[in-house]
Image (tube, rainbow, N blue to C red; front, side):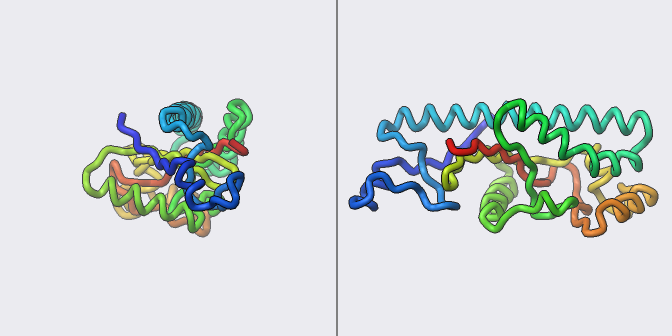
Length: 207
């Protein structure tokens, strides 16, 4: 799987801040892990990338398994309420297990808590643009303030369309009613298969 990195090496920061050699990156900007050795920087970025992917995929697997079990037991309609109640606690439990902060962000949220920030919308636009050219999904590793954040695209599949697809062709009326009940501000329908849905975000706090 192909990955891309956002690397701005420390010697660039030092060149632009000669009077403040210990200055930290401004919140929301992209900067490198503090090390003057380019090879060391790359190794650290790869470490964040590998860990971020591991944690994101573990969370995706846990959510997917729980959702599939619910659908098999009670149907898609009941799964809407399940997601509203259980998705965040499952994600939080994996965050605690790995010692990071794991979340999903999107430009078209179902749950408002998953709405991307203005800064994150830039990453979403970049990745959507790349996917639009047929490029495979890529990860981003970004230094934002005191944190290092990993982002990876979430793409839809056929199962997703049962709740996120066309309101005419894919989503059953009873499921639409459940969505309206639990998510009155929903924006997350109208997707096709293998389309960009959002990003996994793994935040390594204070790293």
